[in-house]
Image 1 (cartoon, rainbow, N blue to C red):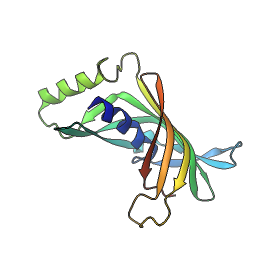
Image 2: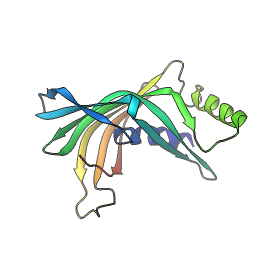
Image 3: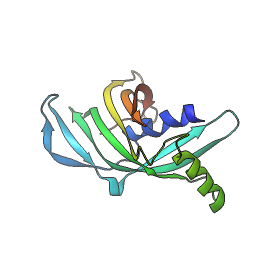
Image 4: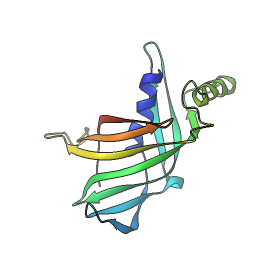
Length: 160
């Protein structure tokens, strides 16, 4: 589950249920407008799967921004608070506490030493011929968890 859950958590951060507000600044290097993520209005949904089981849940953003140029997302960065991870499908309090404790331990996210994780979008490539309700772009970005950064790529539904 570790190999799938780690990328899944922050891959979704780029475009999760993030609410953004227009920032006063413009990203000079890209000519894009920056929109600040509003953590109090935003939640990241995650899904982790293993061969025989899986879990779903939420985690809270601490901040971030999306860069928009010509009505297209062209970049951005998000940060999540790893101490806010919850499994919404585990309703038993004891089981939930055990799961969150394990995910927070050094075996997984090591949240005491690594309280936040980030995702930085480096490219957004439109998927030609994508249906209106389907994923319409491929996102590539640098995900940092426990101080380790890896480039990941995933399909997403992107809109402005």
